[in-house]
Image 1 (cartoon, rainbow, N blue to C red):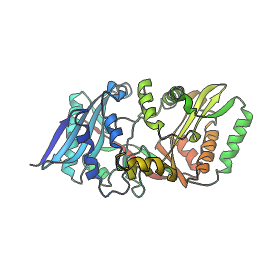
Image 2: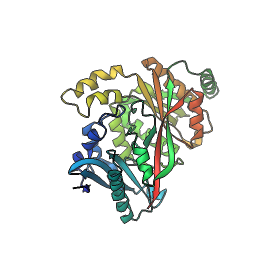
Image 3: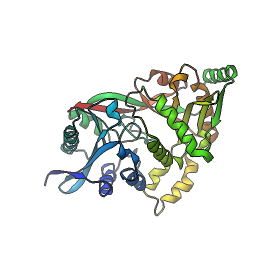
Image 4: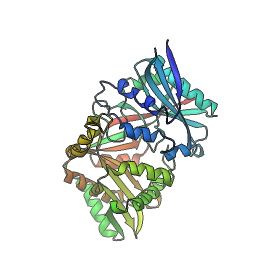
Length: 370
């Protein structure tokens, strides 16, 4: 029968799109199965507000009638304001067969060309506000929460199809221990000399208000970063609701200058340690791992650390680092991942390296003219 590429309709075909990932990643120790109910919600246009701002087409590859790969093609209307003519691919999963990978990529690229796109970039699931990047280094450790993993053959196969590196994104690892004296000293001196700067923990009792503050800082702080896509209030609220169940408020801090929210940090316990045992489902025993397994989580991920542009000349990041470090050590973690950091973000990379961080995973975004 050979290879067939089948366009899918969402949400009717969402489960058919998701299920092959288990077979494709079987035996890959670092892969963490997604929660099926979360992925079904994410791929449902009536439940995910992202679909109001993008055109999406998912494809399923079958070989001799068996599902062997997936890909999604996306035209993000907000991103067209940044790079007109650039479309995205994502959810790019395939068995170790170049012909399958090529057939999927060709289908996505042809769909994007038909939409008037001139270039394809990815993988983005669906854009940089969601999980993104293809792992090219760091397969010896599992993916941290809200990061992809993938198979080691994905990158060389993708490159054989003519896609080339656009940017790399790094995950830094920081071992548990005493915060570097230099960072603590800068933090203490800055707060002493700037009494107008106050740090406060995220208030989970006023979560909606806090999310609006997050959105304001996030969209402003990342405005000039490559690949940033502006998030609407509706999208941000939906994403925040998904993360609410895994947030530890002691790891999330807001810095205010004269009462104005100026910077924030969000660090998440690595619930992937729990999700891996759940194998994609709450039932029959997944709920048990979720309720009781979170007590054994021993790593965290620095997920967001952003400063509004008008405050970026101030060393306001130092006290946020210090507060987060203190809270993480109180949890008894063995270390933290800080990710994902763009290869050209030398300010953030330098700060992490001063904290003793080292690159331990590299994720790549590819591009190809259509």
